[in-house]
Each structure stands twice: as C-alpha cells, then as structure tokens.
Image (cartoon, rainbow, N blue to C red; front, side, top):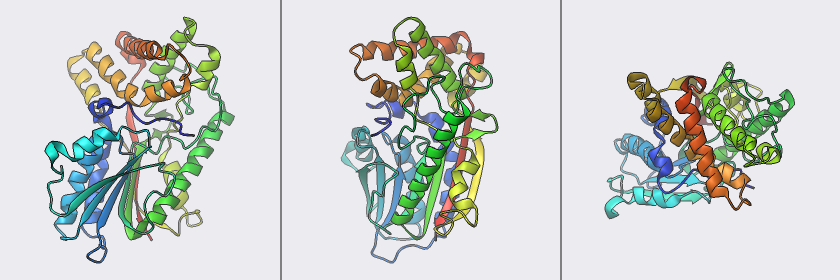
Length: 359
C-alpha cells in the first residue's frame, strides 16, 4: 500500500517548491559535466532521461531544460524525457507544463516527453534503455510503513534538539533505518536494470548531518500543531500514533552504503563518482533574515511543508467526516505557532546527493 498519495495537487506543490529547486540546482552541474563526456547509445536509438518523483512537474521540467541542451550539442539523435511518480500524482499539471500553448516546452527538434506512473522502488521502464536516471527530493519517502504506530512523535528521526518535545525509541528508529536501507537497495537495483552500461544516476534527497536533519523545524511545528488538536479533543491519541510521516532522513553514509564499500551488495553494479552533504538556500528563510517579516515567513514555511505533509494526514484520517476542517485547523495552527515563536522552528535545508555510473 502507498504511504502517500503524493504532493498536494492543482499547482500547490509547484507554487511552493522553491527550496526543492535550490537543492536540485546545487547538484545539476555534476550531471551536466557528466553528460558532456558520457558514451551515447548508437544512433538511431533515443537517449532517454528519467526523473523519478516528478510531482507536478515544475522542477522536473526545469531539470530537463538544463540537461537536454548539453546532449543536443553532442548529437542529433532523438531525446526522450520520462517523468515518473505515483499513480495518484497530479499528472495534469505536468502535462500542461510539457505542452504549454500547445507546443513542446522543450522547443527542440526530435525531443519527446512521456510520463510513467508507479513506485520508484520497482522497475518502470524496459531494461537497458535509460541513459540518465535522476531522483530529487523523493527517495526519503519509504515504500512501506514498518510500524503501524509511532506514539511518541510524528517523524521517525525524532524531535529536534531545540524543541525536544516527544521521543522515538532506538528500536523504533532502527526499524525505519532498516526500511530505508532496503528501499535504497531496491531503488538502485531497479535503476540498474533500466540503465545502459555507462549510464548516469544522480540521487539527491533531504538528509541528516550530525544531530540535525532537514525535518527538524518542519516536524516540530507540525507535531506541536497536532498535539494542540489532541489537547482540544479533535483527534485521539490513537490517531496521533497512527499519523506519522513515512519519511526517513538519511545521512550521506546511509545513502551510499549499498555501493560504497568493495564488499557492498551493489558495488559490482555502480561506480560512485561523487557524493556530498550540503546546505541548500531557502528563499523564504533568506527573505525573513532580510526583512524580519514573521507573518510572511510563517505563511511561506507552512505552505512549503503543507505541500508534502497534508496528503499523509488525509490518508491516515480518511474515515473522518470532518477531515477538511481538521486539515485547515492543522495548518492554520502550524502557521500561528511559527509566527508567534519563529525561533522554535528554524529550517536548515540539509541535502545528501550521489552521482553514480552504471557498470
């Protein structure tokens, strides 16, 4: 069973995904440089580039607009972009973006686009047909919920050191770390089946660094808001325990573990070219530092994380007849908490990324 339906649709995710784009921009040059020298398939075969976790498409299309010219300078072969996400994703926004004004957004001869629905942990395209595979800000979502309940906090990584409200036991966290490891292996195996020899794989995702992770301020605010709903009798403690975000924030070591050691399970399938932990800029954080507008900061921050947390909340409480009002109150409360005490919810956009070559 899916752990989420994807992002909030109807353009909402597209409008609030600037931090994700900043994270992508940091690592795109890695792939641009790699494409300048990678071996291309023999003509007339198409050169395909696949993005796993495309969501509504704004960032996915922008990625392709950066990469396609690099390949077009080298060849006149057909180029094919493949945009993939869950079957419940709002692909309509992607399609509108791909065919704006009835014309291809890529405006390049012999360049084509397609979409594939499915889980990134499965093989989704024919074997040995992909030249480039990518996933940005997506692989942190688990393929399954390893525990039915997480009673002490709404995120498997646990609360931040700043708030320290709630608890996730070592045993609970270990279950999620194990699931994340299995998912990473499944993802890499699926991509290995799809990629041609010499093909490139770039994986980037929100991550952890030392005692901090990207989710600290986000999930502290959301957890505090959910607890207010509990205290008000709007949701039960059992519902609180069932509602956790099925996300795990990996360290860089955890991201590359399946390929990084000579005896690693997938070391014979990939060569690790580059890996890095980095901080990406967050536009609404930078604006807040400049103008000190707490109301604008709280609204932008809440809208940003609402885009990817609301669907899980709706899935968990889907039998509630008052789900719409609960959702509205959850995020209005989150916004108020951040506006009143922004120092309690700092946001650091920690990312981990790795570039690999299929052997």
